[in-house]
Image 1: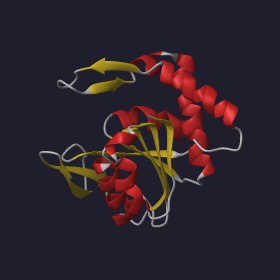
Image 2: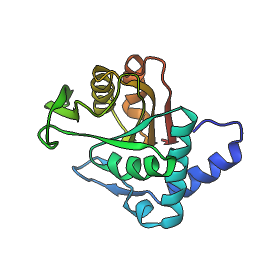
Image 3: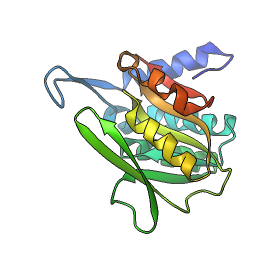
Image 4: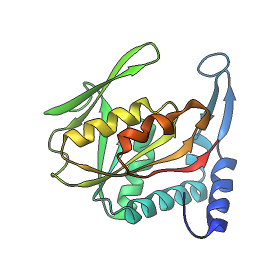
Length: 187
């Protein structure tokens, strides 16, 4: 998070990082999975995270908060509620009832598709997209393309954890269209 006062940011970063557990060789050998469940179970850390995300929504003038399936829901919904904003889920294809818009995107081995309700936004709504981890950026990039097709404006993207070595920030650059990308923790 970028602010003029580095001390609270470092305190928040340290608190959050202390509650994220590394799980080696999950989901496959050679991968170190960043498990946020200990953070979610700690009310002090979880509330600090929700406060920080709600503050970002307010700072960026968001009208609504979008959460990306699935762990993004866990972070975005309480942040939206805390900020007094609506929450909109972006889900895997086939999970939302009613009329949806879809966006396909490339995975390492194949393709995937995400959807949002066609009527989730009014034209010009400013949305903050929240997810737990920014890795390669594929899902986030597809979500930004999808949200723009609804007529929404991107207020920014916020993530708990950015895995910088996977290049997601560089991939998102063009899709952000000048909107900020904020990571509370970058490794």
